[in-house]
Length: 188
Image (tube, rainbow, N blue to C red):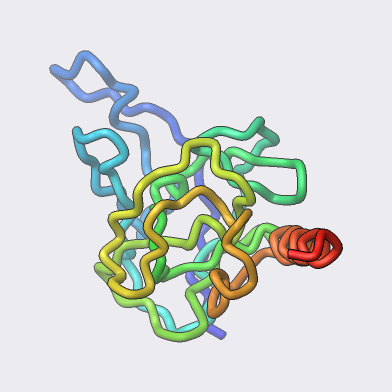
């Protein structure tokens, strides 16, 4: 399976002559793999692939993560733990028709299994694949048509039917199973 991995370098600000805010221009953490398309609009920045890879291929290892509390920028890695990615991977936005899977058990990002990734594609993942309850739920604007889930608040409450067809992290699978068992025990 092809691998497109480059160990990220720490994000450090660059000095831009004539620019007062050097922090807004950090060095890329995955050069040659992705570039960040920055937007002045809140939550409008995104990550764009600089490589083409076949379905299921490893896109990147997650190597710069640190433990964190639940926040809009964090990723849930287990039932009760979150991390901050501390890399340009944070710009991989949500989509109900994602291009990537964030496998938090293996700490890697892979191309989805059902289609290849092409250079120029937006890098997205299905947030409920890792998040049980979102810190900041939001109205989805992914444009995935019938596949779009509408209001994204995490996997909780979507049930097995709502998550059908999506790759899910082990902790989400476990929590979905527990939710189903509780509903069955309550007679719902």
